[in-house]
Length: 495
Image (cartoon, rainbow, N blue to C red; front, top):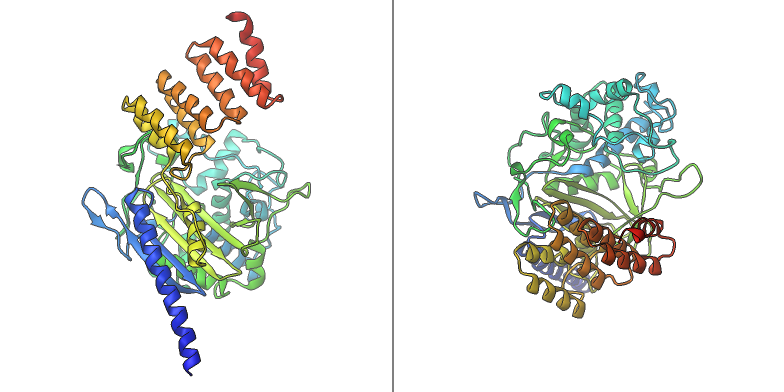
């Protein structure tokens, strides 16, 4: 009896220490504007830790609490996949069935339900698909049921042969939601309520009728207005990047409003087979293979990922089989990530854009395993760009030198510096753009792509001789860089 008590006490103390560390961990992130929201960490299906950080409404100083609701963005795709697989489990459809079997007007005969859920359909993306309709009917709200008529009207071609490539695409899951409605005879909203939210006891979750209307306890969303800003603004003050974002009310791809604790209930119900059978869940969590036999893979923050049916998964299983889906809309970053082998889950809902949910969740997994971890840090390119924009070039240069001496102080990626440099260029801030690409060449001296971009910026800023020097450096690092060869050929005689 004494031995059992000691074991239980040891476990309790271990969890308590992790809880204290997790609170410190998330508090630090929140202080640096890297997390503003709700977090739940669970082991063995039970809460190890839950916490709320920051404000649901920054202007009114209203704090986030356990009842605060967030749009969960693309985590919704796992619900759509689960619903389809529930219908399969009941014998009402087959994953290999063509979409046309359920939606006869769908104009592509060779696309299956599997193609939709695995993002291998080849369907056109939504970004500019509806531009003409929006121009013709500016007051119209575009919904799922406008997708097929639009494909038909404009005879929209497929981007690739179904099953030949992988391309993350919201339209796939909008079509899947319509199949759920057709097969079940219920609205997508009603189906999820009856077959997932209800059984999982997710009492604070729903699919809104209008995604633009805020639900009770729903948080405001905030983001940075550009790549060099360090001050958050309410997304309501910003113009959407694509017209369709302001004019649409899609569902199935995103749209669910929920809480972190409700998502933990969903995760527990799903992975204990309360709302979906073992066979169907395993099918969802099996990597997709393309027509040529190659496994779908892509990279997120240095980790190789594959994709199943509405779920991503790390290909490296040395620390257990880890599956996830993240979500991102303007002003919102989310992730539900689950280590099946260790039965550990991290759920993050942050009402600020670009929260580092992957590096955060990976660090949390290491923390609860009592391993050393890397604390997510602020973005170097954003801090650097902010100083340039304020005219503090000396401080910006000093920041780069400090980073080169201690690379753990900030997060720095080639992609971020490139995007910053091009944003300055588009805004006709030539000097800032060139300074950014120069800094990138110091931080990533072996990147042929950085020198290629630097050359392009120099050309656009009227500095042809310097541009050719950068293109030459790019070629030295990558002799196969055809763009650099072509740009040097075109401009060498025009100096």
